[in-house]
Length: 491
Image (cartoon, rainbow, N blue to C red; front, side, top):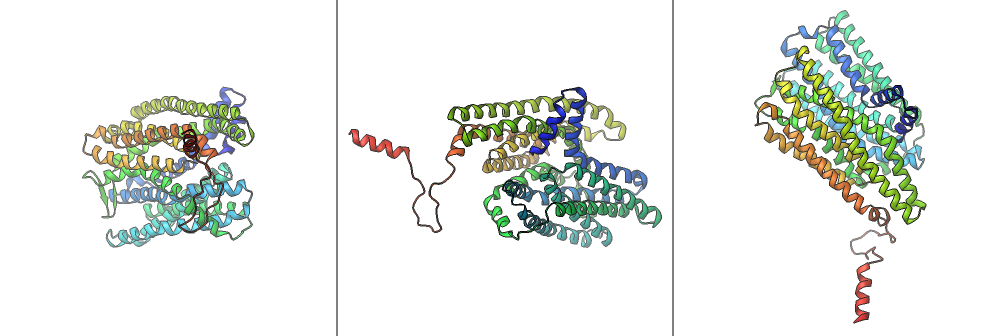
């Protein structure tokens, strides 16, 4: 993440209104531009091909297919990204660049197999039970797998700080999406929904291909050291669960409402609740700038304090270490409070704009009744995510896993209760889950602050322990043993 901070420091160093706007725009581009490009391409396709004139079933079948592609593509790709990112960071720090391709191939195989394990049975169910056309089912599966590959390769380009290329490739891919869908529909007479779906497949495939080609151009040597990657799955398994629970928490409240009587079932296969899902989308857009603000400030301010503390630990005096530690945690508290203040202002402004203007575009009624509570929930959730990243900074993997699990489990339980309340309180489950996760993360950070010296200076072993169950302890010093011996001498 340091590469973002270096660039932002150069932009913000002039301290003018123009450079502040440029810095915010740059932060936005590197974080959410791909998502905006995809949404824009889908809207353009719908306008060009007359999507709104189609029958209700065709529109909902396409909408549910795209919804499932994105949600479950992210769910199946996310568990392994944090662990692979940790491995990549370590080998780049050690300058073992020839080990990157083994990591890439192992991760690619795991992602493809894991995603197909869930995708193929669902497609069979859609084909047999839903009686959906085989070509439409196959196009949906191809889009799902292509998006998984896009998400996966983005990880390596992010590590290389090549955010501009990521956004550019999405622009190329979505440009092809619009072109292919238009040609298939207007020239070859293909149905609108199938043409749009194949267009998305083409765009995702092009984006994934360009990303893979760029990764291969960066890293040409292959050490063949695949075993080291597998070893990381055993060593840092907490990262897999942390990312999975966090991503699950993002959508588990939607899944709960998909089981209620308010759900809509399409082709006896797809289940959704359009009003709640749309309100969720609006609420996420209301607060997504929190990630932009947090990344900007964290890279510019906290990373420098963390670096100073690390250098003090390596060769500083005890007083220097204590002072650096104190300044680092003061900066941490400052960044969290700044994030709360800035994001609160942005959320209030966007909330008012959505309430005023969204009814003009046909999004009102139940959607805007559900939206306020969800907006509050995502506001707290993004604050929790900031705390989660701080736990990553201090290598507190068990703490991060506990926070993610508490968030997902509390959101699930809260949503089960809130779905029986009135419409305006439907989002209370997410509010409850995010608040629980935020609280657990807060007290975990306080614990890290209190015990950081123990974690830094007492985490290693002077004696390596070998294999076997019966072996001597690796403890070489114990304060209590000295106290007991002194008491015996005095007696």
